[in-house]
Image (cartoon, rainbow, N blue to C red; front, side, top):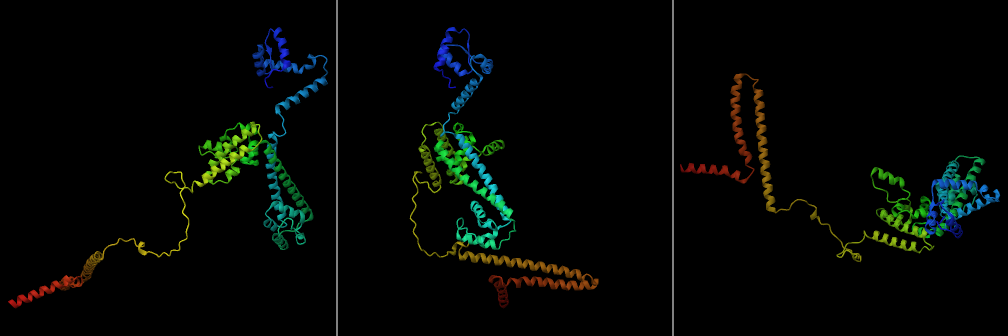
Length: 471
């Protein structure tokens, strides 16, 4: 099995070396190589040799005289047992198969418990639906059912063992005014039998969890310290054994359990997953979402070291795991505190925070920031107002002239209906009157606009009077 030559085999082979003229047929290639090195004896290993060995085993009774078939069968059985023990290297403390089976059974028990409790709540909910809302704990719910049974018995029953006084009073009050249907005794018996099953399975689960904790601390103490009993056991079960897990790289351990997501991401060319089973470790769970990827990568690297130390190391202490976990926790604190730090001149020192002092200052509202208009001098404002008034007056004059012209056109169209002779006389008079009226109006309108406009016609009159006196 190990490729070594035994003392008895050496003696036999030395005798053969002197008499042998042909190569030696060997069932194991490694053993043939060792014989050739040490004894200079040529060896053959081929499929023909394997067939020859199988024929010798099957015809062992005829080839060795004086051996009974019963003795040969007992010898074969003993040899098979010793070979299997040697291959397994059986050790009660170092058996990872027990962990694989225990964690698989624990997961199955959790599924069954959830199904049983759901069925129990739905079944008894037809009789007493209010109890499910009052008691949230599943085990306490089943224990109360097991003790009381029918809804009518809640008034006389004492539930102080399982419930506090306030909840007990609430349950009794709800039982008196419950909206549930009446059920027979046979139905209650079946529900109570289901409750006993739930209680027994939950008790067995706690016992199995304790067994798993002890077994994990015996086989892989450093892994248990790093990621916990359940996550460590699931990693071992997923890999098949502790030795197989020790052969994996850190990047593989990090995404172990997320194979479907990994291959889906590779196929669709998207981002690959950052964590698999290791996500449920306490160190990853307590970090903020933006640092989960970094911590899972660092945790996977340290966990692989712990796995290899547990698988191949002779020491069974958890000192290495405790040391690595302390390093990871320190790294996690530095990552979380990085957002609070401020970069100083050197880039290393922390910014000093000043001591907080309460200052009771009364602040008044400053209305200067409300206006968004540009500030300008008073003279500038007055000039702008005058210009605006002038433009408004000019627009009003133009509008009045247009209105008058339109009125004249309308009147002319109406007067065309009259007789031709009357039209000529009337039109001439009206046109003369209107022309005079149009010429006089702008002068009268311009009078209130400015002081200069008023002064100009008065000066002309005065000049005319002076000329008259001189004449």
